[in-house]
Image 1 (cartoon, rainbow, N blue to C red):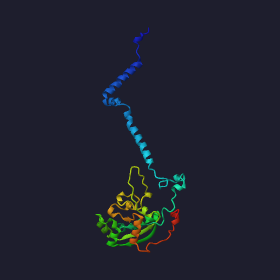
Image 2 (image 1 turned 90 degrees about the vertical axis):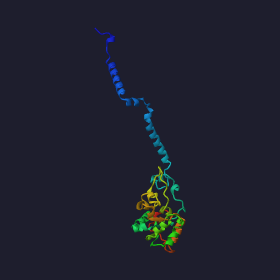
Image 3 (image 1 turned 60 degrees about the vertical axis):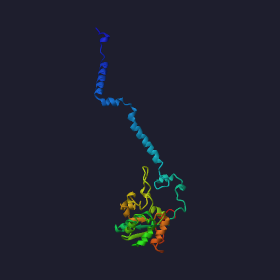
Length: 264
């Protein structure tokens, strides 16, 4: 005889009840879990959302600082998709005969860096137009650094430059002054530094000079920064005239000229 309906047991219901009781007891024994479960779900997504938004912002901001199509950062493929007039050098804007004065200071001479420094300019494609090893007088150096007279470090600078022979040189080539010595741009989060676009000498303070520049590779202290370079075309002319007599600077065509310059 079948048992009354109300006397029957439902195994599924019993199992569910036991599991619920077990989960409740586990939660009761773990207050940390109970606190975490009480938090609203969106809080857990905030770090991920913040990361995604930051990545998107960095991508768009960095894309605004991409170099121009005619810069040294461009790939040949980039240039192929741009009209030649965009990246071709305008005629008459820069001369391949621009000259700059470069002097290897006493510390550079004493350390045997004359050869490596000359190689830096030759490897870049510049032409050596004059060179001599000289020990200048105090009056000569004071005339050379006349714009610094009155500075606290002036006397120490003259004493340092008198401490040994100096290798004075004239280098010639397109944009020679700017390439030989230019102010290093301030570094920012979005800066993209290319060593091929750095000045050959580097910043006045060697510690601020990029690796690959002369000062960045061979110097540490600003008071022993190995080289001097003209900071403008006008000053280059004055310095060349001060250090070299008429006829000392040789004019000739470099044998690799046509392999260095596309246009004279």
